[in-house]
Length: 249
Image (tube, rainbow, N blue to C red; front, side, top):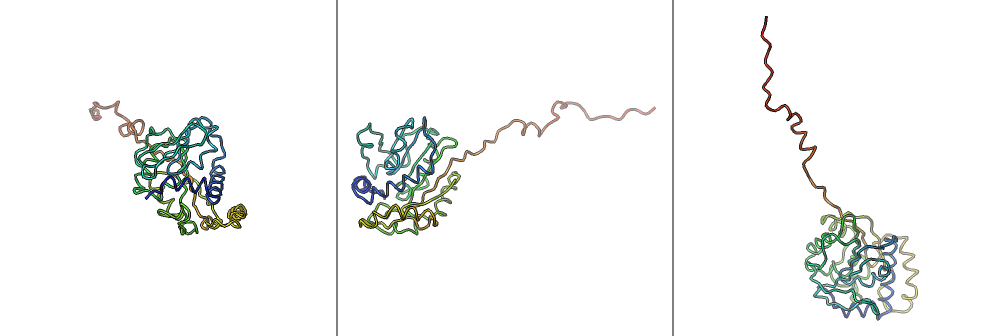
């Protein structure tokens, strides 16, 4: 089940641990997507708005979709609201118009992950990219209910990539974040940046979250044309009888 939006807001915006988590995951996202989003449509689903702020100034449109069971809050503070309450399996977005999609606190808590991923695939345009942020099954954060990553179904990188491939996505790369312990103690918070640097040199299996980037695979359309035409390459000769032998003499 989805967490309540008030709990998510309090964690990410009113706790030191949440602000730290927000910063480190967002840093990974901007590292994966260093290119400009000028003129693009960027959408977040679940509670992805803490990661979307870097795109507000350049993107043509930024939308934060929040599922009904979770609830919605206005975002961003001090600017025109871009948050929208929606059905998690029926988004108010036209097919194929999204250039970049970010899903956080959406997949692992969904009651129907297959339907959700179908909706993700539908709204992405050809060549569009998506990033999924989920709790790491092997990490410490999924084992603690002190953070939002301790709820829902955690994944391994292999499980998540296999699931995304079955829904038509091409996996581009995966990484991790949140290598510090999920504690509010000041010592660990102050040393968080050191742990993130350390984590870059070890397998992402030890991180608190797995981050997978995918692109939309567009299936080839089977059409007529030359392939169909060559099945009867000599149709111009249709109607001619078989050659007859010339009379002797």
